Each structure stands twice: as C-alpha cells, then as structure tokens.
Image 1 (cartoon, rainbow, N blue to C red):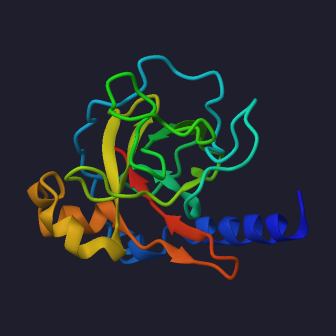
Image 2: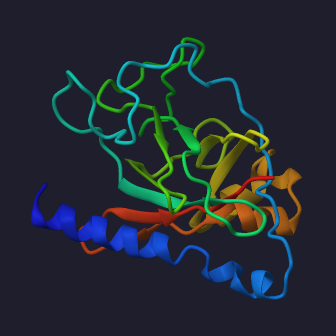
Length: 209
C-alpha cells in the first residue's frame, strides 16, 4: 500500500467514525432512528456469486488494468434504530460498469471484464464498511445508482439503492426514485465529492429494523 492509499484509508476511517453525527440529536432526544427505506432489487443481482467478490470492485483477479470511470471510495456504518453499531453485517453492492452494462446474462451489452460489478464485505465491530468501486453512471432510463443488500442476524434483510446527490435532474426523472417521499429520498441520496486525486468519496449510512 503506497502513501496516498494509506492517507485515503485514514480519511475514510475518520469519516466512518463520525458517521453517527447527523443522528445525534435524534438519539439525544430518545427518538429511534428512521430505518433505511427499501428499494427495488432490479433484475441484475448475480445469478451466481463471482469467485472474485471482495470489496475492491476496481481490481479483478486475472485481469490487467483498471476499468475506466471515476474511482470511488464508498463507506458507511450499519446500525440499529438505537444507533448501536451492528458487527458482522454482510453488505453487498452491485452496479453497472462505466458503459452502463451489468455483469449479468440478461443484461444487454458486453460488460467490462476489468470491473468486478459485484462486491461484498462484512462490517467491523464499529459497524463500518467500505468499498472501492466506480462512481455510478446512468443507463437506459435510470439515474446513476448502486444497489445494496444488507443482512444481519436478528434484523430484517434490506435491499435498497443509493443515489447520487449531484444527479438531481436525472433523479427527478427516475421512475424508482420518484416513488419515494422527500424524507426517504434524503436517506437514500448522498454526495460523491472528489478528493485531491480526482477520486470520489461517498458515505452511505444504513439503519436496519
């Protein structure tokens, strides 16, 4: 791991440690946190989990080079309605590649073999997770999004989608995003902001019910 990667990991770790900040006023008032809203799974969840399915979607075993697109460091926390971190939650994500193609037999087009398309990880004792992936792109009539599935013992499994705050116009026209209330949209939308290297950093915190 080079110096830049170490610095970025420290930044992400620091951001994850402060993930509960927006919820502190609710917790201080004794109010339970709102559960992250579900969203459609869509047709492109993997038919078979690929052999390379770690939390680094940018580097695929057996492939040379990195997929085009804006590299993104995606992180967050998984907690219950009382703000307690959930250790050992399985977090899965899947998304299309830079050209809008999914790694799925029913998806049109030919996916980029340099992009993993699906990844999974497990939260640590602080409830935190992280992925290295691409900033999502639009395809067909869909606004950019990343699919999530989160599972933990004792909680309802959540399937949802993460949306990009900087894509307000596309979001407003998206059939699935438009079905959510304003409160739900706020819980499913986050900013993808660039760091000094041009990579994006995004935080998506999840409350399981």
